[in-house]
Image 1 (tube, rainbow, N blue to C red):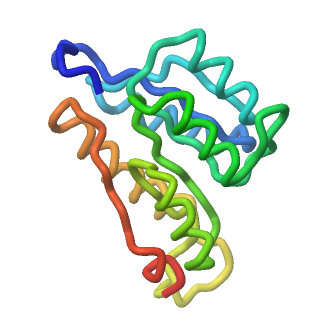
Image 2 (image 1 turned 90 degrees about the vertical axis):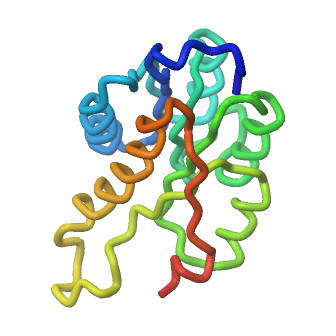
Length: 163
């Protein structure tokens, strides 16, 4: 983070997910915060890196398992992102539930990890309400960012994704 950044300026964010509806939902969610602005979108890791190179930003929300293009996918894309852009906050969105895989993501130094999975406490089963719950978790993370002008690190332990 740039210590001399104007805290009254909106947090500029780039969102990356290979599902167009997820991109739209996140962009709409972020539009509800006056001090956050989506400045770019990407559908794979190559597009993400191109967007970050072209458009200054403070925050990237990235799907873990979107196609990689030339820059790899999954953990390799996260690793490459943190190497290339260490000063940009990276929040990873994922459907992953395996604790070991989630621990690997956290160990790469991401600034946040948000599950796209429905809560297991939902007795209805299926995907009913999964999108709303994912957006609710994302809204909490974004509210933390919007509240103080700095992207916040929000982690759940890898074990808590599986329960």
